[in-house]
Length: 266
Image 1: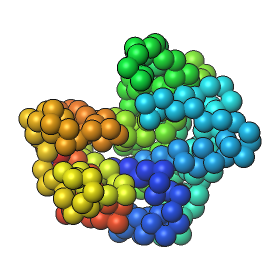
Image 2 (image 1 turned 90 degrees about the vertical axis):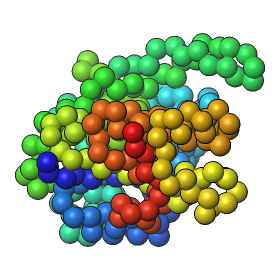
Image 3 (image 1 turned 180 degrees about the vertical axis):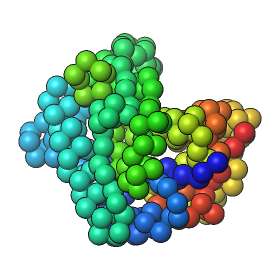
């Protein structure tokens, strides 16, 4: 099986010029086939504010109304994506920028009303133009990759009916990795962010949990060791492992060589 590495970089790293340049240099040095999936939420919030558009977050998730959809489409699909492509080209990587709509690589449906508990009260929340992924096309991505291109994927999908949808970048990375595993690649999925890995103590940056399995996750979730935004990240990682991805690593943005961080496995 041919190896491929899918790296997800978060919006916080995208906003830090030094950290981003270091990550792109390391990404360029990864041998073999690879894909970069990026976020950009912090930049979208800044651009929206400059246009007088308020960013609404519920439970850490962005509400995407019609105006915000225009902002995230411009920022994710344009500003952030094309800057990453240009920087990778400068590093000798033949990058091509994509959204889920391009070549129909990732299709989704608009998220239905979601029941959430907010300040102790159950409410039905409308997240607006947010997409939950239905499928990713590993064969289409493979066709590009086998031509020597390195896809750089923005966190936007489409519904097949002409609508762009804002989509969680962690989910995009996991679905991309699963689709590539399904067409025969040996896939390593790396989530890079601001910490060295999943921490047992959020106040101690060196308290990295080396390995997390399904049973470990249930235990850490129950005792509160893992909570908040890390929960969906690990759930995505475990789903990817269950779907045939070889390994998932959660690590520092400056440590994407596959030897550091927290390894998620069965």
